Image (cartoon, rainbow, N blue to C red):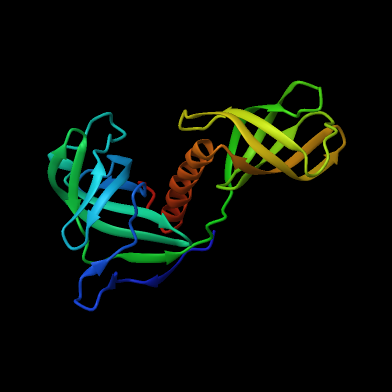
Length: 229
């Protein structure tokens, strides 16, 4: 994955106010500045530029909710083909499990490849619709738009065929009846490899997109030496 800085300050409006492209549902990857062992991910609920970012209260990897000792944060998120990274700090609790953190004045931006495929090893149930019933395969990689499936047998399926998948993501989210289109088929000895494109339902595809964004963000940070993410 290519990762190189293209800007070291946030874009600003004419009045000089820092602006970053946060949207409802944006996923932030977080770590505590004071205790780097505390790391988490969270969802953005809203933002007031220059004042506050409203997020779901993080549950850190050590099994505790946001605490005073983790009040200073480094945050990162993926926006298109850019990785954005900034410092923030806890401001206050707003509602149950919803908090406000400081809106940053400076943001680092890095260009990355958003189509990065995430290596995985996921047992997958596949319904081909050809009368064969359900067959088992192994998902070898996944991206926001598709995946690669491998089978230790010859599977006779044509390019353009429609499949449905069932599997559990590494973060324990269950995906059922995911509709896919076969884009590529390759046979090698007694093995078959499918290249698939996801097509719905939207809720399932959204879960996969969120999972991939978190993984790509973490990979890009590690490539830059931020191993604690």
